[in-house]
Amino acid sequence: MGDWAVQSGSGIRFEWGLAGADRLAAEAACLVIVDVLSFTTAVSVAVRTGIRVLPFWLPDGPAASAEKGAAAYARQSGARLAVARHAVTPDSPWSLSPAHLRTAPFTARLVLPSPNGAAIAAAAPPNVRVVAACLRNITAVGSWLTAHGYGTPSRPVAVIAAGERWPDGSLRPALEDLLGAGALISDLHHQGTGPPSVEAAAAKAAYEGTADLTHAIAAGASGRDLAAMGFAADVAIAAEEDVCTVVPVRDADGAFASG
Image 1 (cartoon, rainbow, N blue to C red):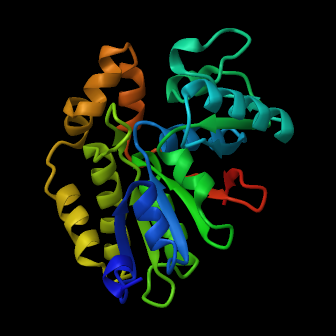
Image 2: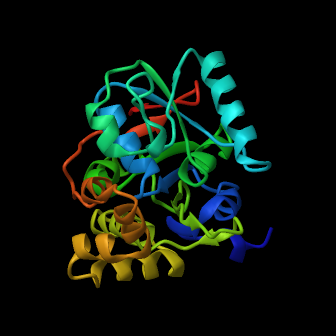
């Protein structure tokens, strides 16, 4: 794989989606996933309460197969299973919705399926440190990365904007993930790490050039879609900046817990 594909020489790198994460993981010391609406936001909410979150996704096959696979994985892991937002019941109160997770009862282990952020986390090589970042914990994640020596050319950090999916399953670059990734890259840059790749610098510029972040998240395609489905509260939670000091880190068990 050529140096151009992995942004070699840069301490902070940036890419999109599962394929981008797979490429950058070849050289990255730490992979930071940004899925603002809603996987990494949901992870921040859950881990803050002490829940260990196990990411899961089956990328191929029908949705029914993915649901069966997630249920089997939850049983094998001794965990409860998060269901689709619209499928929440008193018996299954956990979902990808951060608002649902704020009010759901505590469970020690939770399988959280997602075709974007969870898929990236589940597929990441076991030798690469994986962190979940969102707008709610940007400063905490940036400080944690710096304290652990990540963000230099010898220990590069790869910031991955998870993105969303078009109806045909292809990657849809999502504004909220670009801005979330840019926010983290901006924080790392101000802490003296780097240098950023050109791709990372462009994401940083997008964040720093956005005057009203809350409006951008709500007015973007993903925010409007969730609001139209009745989940405007999830959008509002995702737009909260620096309200969480928890840094969710994937452990040897494959679960996100406080790092």
